[in-house]
Amino acid sequence: MAKPSLTLLFLLFFLFSSHVAAKQPRFYRSMSPTSLGLRKEKLSHLHFYFHDILSGSKPTATRVAEAQMTNKSPTLFGAVVMIDDPLTVGPEPSSKLVGKAQGIYASASQSDLGLLMVMNLEFCDGKYNGSTLSLFGRNAVFNTVREMPIVGGSGLFRFAHGYAEAKTQWFNLTTGDAVVEYNIPQELDIDYINGDDDDVTKRKTLYLLGLAS
Image 1 (cartoon, helix red, strand yellow):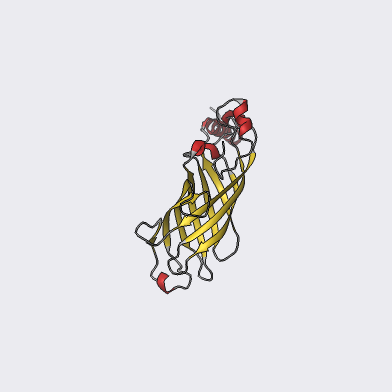
Image 2 (cartoon, rainbow, N blue to C red; image 1 turned 60 degrees about the horizontal axis):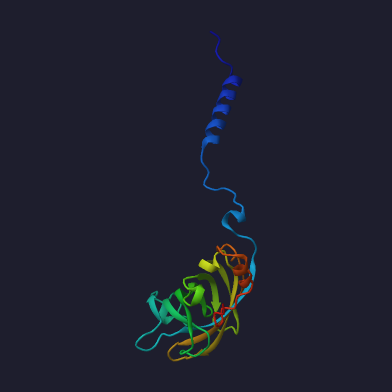
């Protein structure tokens, strides 16, 4: 019997390999936005005040980690702070609570006071109750206005993207306590929520300040 040629063996190997590869499941697939109920994006403007309190008997921010060099560093490089900071409609501590900023910030620069901010903005009032925005970015705290990315969200803010502008309203050099104004213009994919057309129309523009319905 004649031995099969090298060309035939190569062809059989190629066909077998192609068949096996075609059967392998993929970990990704293309999706249509309409399959998730998404229709179009809406521009929204959120405005609130962030209260970062390190002093007193019930601080909302506390240092949880540091490096050996942290307390010798002029920028407190390596310090990590966990936060559960109130978000309010106005700058006063007694102003209406609309949410919490929960996460961490850390001193990430040895040359200036630049914080790495990693936090969820969790809202707790009205129909925004339980919805969150996720912020991840650099906060150069001595700049008048700082810009940080909004990288996502959940609930009503699912698929959100945009940026946050932070501006310090008040800062105590002794205690480190601060009140920071946040403005967040962003695009929101909010039409995924089940509801009638009238309800969708009402959500064309959201102003979180006051949590107007």
